[in-house]
Image (cartoon, rainbow, N blue to C red; front, side, top):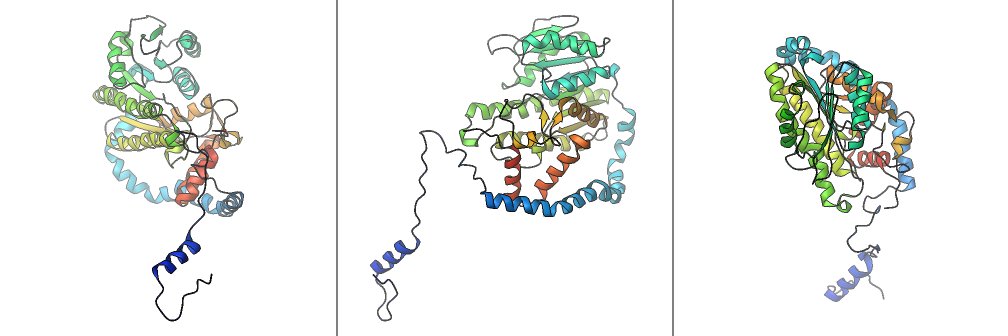
Length: 393
């Protein structure tokens, strides 16, 4: 049937309906979905091979501009802005220079110190002579961990307490004493309050905390709607709520002594949204934001807050065989000990945040710059490509 518009009378409603149906009605896309599950990986739409190739070509062509931008931001612009920054930081020059945190000022409290970056941060602080109060989830490693810290520096004292099940109390391993402690799970509501109330039960040398390291954290991979609600809430509680509570409690005594250091473990995902790890990336972005704001608030007090932002690190964060693409690139994957050393150095240098990684964090800084300089779609594609885990979900 010819659907061309007639020259004479006005088209009828039936004629117009037929024309619309024939010309614009799309063919519906059918996706087989099991009950209660959103299609994955179709939910996070992946660019096709042609588009991905064009993205890579565009990235390579514009790489000189990224490097130029990095040099300008890292070296040239700071020279011009130094005078303004000096004026803004003038009230805190004396306090940040002279109020150096030393082992005799108090102990270091490190959460998540039983493995990974947290363990190496604790070892680094032990090498600097700080007494340690450590928390972790693996109670059977407490004794060995305390001995390892003592082997690093025989003169330090160590207390380690591990969270057991919700119905049991944490077990304490100490080089001097083993007090009876009540339950304290960092992933539960009011965990910071429970932890803070444990300290009076610890030895006297544990009462003055001069360094707080919020390393404990958790991450779950997958489309947001496919991750169980309990896991989403656990991420927010453990990665954000507990560090905020611990800082609120331990910063006040630091301010009274006019010296102290706080480190919040962020990530290079703190700078960009992370598809397929939306909540995890958001929790790390929160830590970066609050650390930078608090660093400025405390600039004249002798106390500083630093966000350490590592990239792909050789830890047990990923299951064997499920490492993302970025963790398989040799120049991007960093050893945990080197990562921890850079994190601690940045904290003692009182930086608001530090991007750590191989070659002084150069490669990770370039990744951050690439993600921030591009459009929303390209930035999300870039992050999703690097962090995507090769699973069959």
